[in-house]
Length: 452
Image (cartoon, rainbow, N blue to C red; front, top):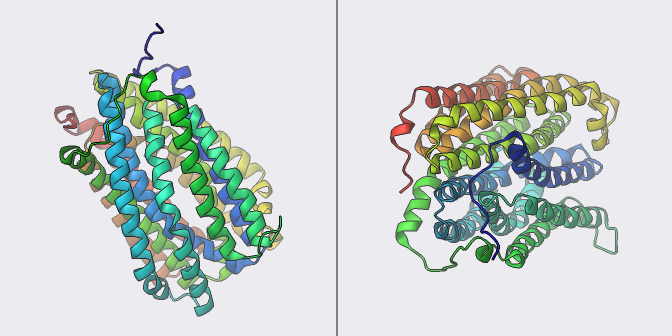
């Protein structure tokens, strides 16, 4: 009989890369797809490209809430993997899915009822506001399937089966890309829906992704391979445990992404469509950078939670330094290429030489922000791994408070340049980085490691 696979994480350089690179590739495929989506809409006009900023970040608020729940599940399941408590891994996944499905219904109803009023508060001109409302009423349906993907991905990462994520991402991105091209421009015999075509394409691609990850997990028969008992019973104690870990992270990500939405609202109020479109390209750049940075965030959460589960928390700082060094080197390589050949990125959006020239200042500012972000993400996820998610929430609260004060002052009151407005990311990620490492160095997390 074959030996049962170990759930203890490999902390060597090879082990870190084997865990992280598939997550990076899995993140890269949909981000490239989002980039092409924006590029397609950019060819419709700067107005459509600008509106993807407001609608895209609005949807990201709810996606980020799911990511917060995903991070909580990953922390719990990775801890259980380190403890070799195999049955509790699936139990955590199942209760996370139940919570996610309830949340998705609430968010769909919220969007239908409240969003029209929120959009009007942005002072976008009436035709743009109408387009944004119609887009979001369609787009929000995808949240159900996105949550199913996120929860199951946490399960796969905790079992260190990250290669599967690449298959799911490839299927999802392929469907999205084909439907984007078909439904936006009316190719392949599909109706020409323009801006709304992107909403339908995104929802259908998330349905395809959710089905794919479920089928793969069933096909691999992971429960048998890892001797994990499958039980669909609902335990109120387990729901409480997941919520206790998840709510601070869900609140953290919701607040941070809502603040980003407020940033785009202020951009739409105080800058022209071309400047709004530049900001949208910067958002896509952040998306590309997140391929690597957030993959290392997930790896940090997984590796450190697993080590703590094994009782090896004394190795945390050495591992944290190693993860930060590897991540920073990768980010520097990416940013060097980007700033040496900026047209490789900006030409995708088809906006002309004037647009590219106007984007160079914000590009430099965002490049510095990405470097700080890379270290900040690892710092924050290291705190998540300790199980002290309430501390994570307050770190986020401090960062967001500084961010919003800065953005409102610069954009709404002083009406300074777009470059200065984007320096808000320096403020936000700088606070996250400093407070995260300060807590890990001087906080009392060593005395409160239990997740029960």
